[in-house]
Image 1 (cartoon, rainbow, N blue to C red):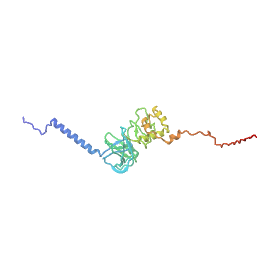
Image 2 (spheres, rainbow, N blue to C red; image 1 turned 180 degrees about the vertical axis):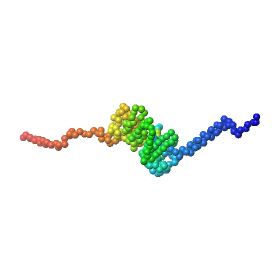
Image 3 (spheres, helix red, strand yellow; image 1 turned 135 degrees about the vertical axis):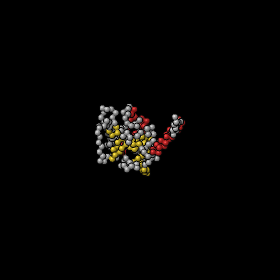
Image 4 (cartoon, helix red, strand yellow; image 1 turned 120 degrees about the horizontal axis):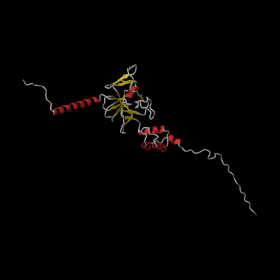
Length: 269
């Protein structure tokens, strides 16, 4: 029988490892190259958050926002930027956060506020202009939630026998509370304590601390004994509501009559 010859090259285990390592390096380089050209579309982000170095249109307008990390640390946003996409405000504005390291986040609620309809599929995200848009379905929704008016985020009931409803607790107004994935855009702790102190009716420090220790404010965000002891506001409303005024009618306003007594001295001769 004639000897059969092949052009295939038999790879050794070492050559296979080298090839696999080269593929990993190429995939990593491709990922790093395209990282700055895309952002994560986050329905749990109430504001779009940009990472330094990503492809946005820079502006000189300062942001003035402070973001709270899951670790409790805070980091300020530097400036505002714009998306290259021609979308309506507030969907186009992005707050640049220098400490953001993983991905830029595009806010789903901001697109909803700008009257855009977003559809998420297993392979892509589709954003439509809601003006004149008609969407038809041939099935009922298997799960229905609602959008919370306070936070601007969408909520889904955890139990099957619970109908969708609005948020029960109004803790902070939407203008004071925004969330960006796991990054919360809130005022400082001092401002939060001041705001919640006003919501509680400007109680004295002793009364408020006693109520917090008893658990009466367990659902209020960021309200702890440590925060109250450190940032308790000395407001005029508290002093005016607990001042001890002098009672009326204690001292007479009538002028007293002065009685002069003349003593006569009798001299005996």
